[in-house]
Amino acid sequence: MVKIIAIEPESQAERAGIRVGDDLVSINGQPVTDILDYYYWQAEEELDLVLKRGSNTLNLHFLKTYDEDLGLELQPPRLRSCGNNCIFCFIKQNPPGMRPSIYFHDEDYRYSFLHGTYITLTNLREVDLERIAQLRLSPLYTSVHATDDEVRRHIFQIKKSDNFLAKLSFLREHRIDLHVQIVLLPGINDGAILEQTLRDLYQYREVILSVAIVPVGLTRHRGQLPDIQPVNKPEAVATLARFKRWKRWYRNRDGQPWVFLSDEFYLLAGERLPGAKFYGNYYQIENGVGLTRQFLESFKRQARRLPKAIAQKKRLLFITGTLAAPVLESHVLPVLRRITNFQVDILPVINNFFGQSVTVAGLLVGQDIIEQAKHRRGYDQIILPPRCTNHAGLLLDDLTPQAIARQLQTQVAVFDGNFLQLVRNKDG
Image (cartoon, rainbow, N blue to C red; front, side, top):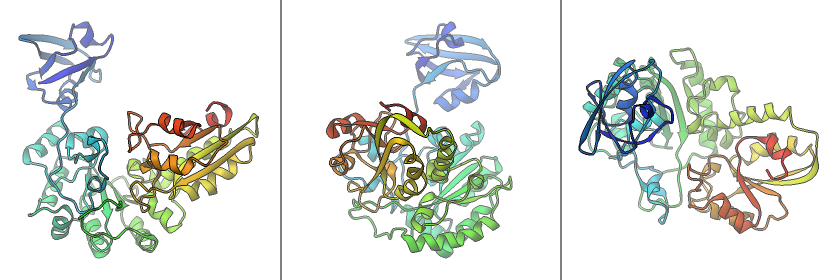
């Protein structure tokens, strides 16, 4: 059973007298062990619920439409931890002293379905696979890295085969769609190994809708971890050259592009990004695939409505990572600087917290921003990159935009994508 933590106002659950703190035991005789059971079994139009309230048992009957939610919010399931010991695991590359959640190694198929987090499948048991099939948990997001068994054992640091292809066959048999990522490790899973991985995965294109290749992230806090080479410019150029063949050869079941490179490859190589049409549904945008293109397309649409001048002078400083800075310099700043009375500059912040090889804006921390922006004065507002804070408004070093603002004595905000508002409002 699962505890009820909230009830939607005016919902069937509220009208039936269900209370916060009640435990949901079963729906139509099916045990409810987590929120996935609730989503699946409550889809029926006639429901019999069993609840526990202290020592009392409640039996409630509901009639509803197929897509109507009863209005219950259940306690989230406890995250399952990862049993692998990956040689490139970013969590193991975090410095000491961060909040505890930063160090948790999650590996939970339920969160993969609910939130798009990546799992390796290495720890999936038969009972897990059966439940995925029964509840139709599709799509899932999975980290593959290699299909060669020896290479997989080395990357994941597991002692025996995890029967990955057998699990993939089970998911295909039960029509569970997948989105796959491959973290590219130069000298380990690139070259012929990568080609083999793509060929093997393509045999499952009925259910694998997309494959994203992303460069390995390496920080300066690797300690005793194995030596891994970063993806540099020559490696990015070589990968893009091979990618020209892959995008001709590989198509998913809908005839759309099947294999993608994350934006970092294009930015490292200094090559032009594909157009918006190539990314289709932006399946893996949270993985940095097409994020820059989507940003540029959004800016292009907004640029048509930007004013030619504003009444009061306004000066903004955009914070970004060193990787994205040339994109802003080339495509965004020239347009904004044509607006009379509107001045905008950018500050590419070097990531000293994780190491200078970490160049993406989403991994910037407050202390680096403060240190490198403290001499930049006279701005009405400092704009932080989107996705640099979590749901609680914290950067990775637990500083908030408000704390940064106090240190810099300048108003600070996280950019929400709305250029029109930035230009027009004196207070942002």
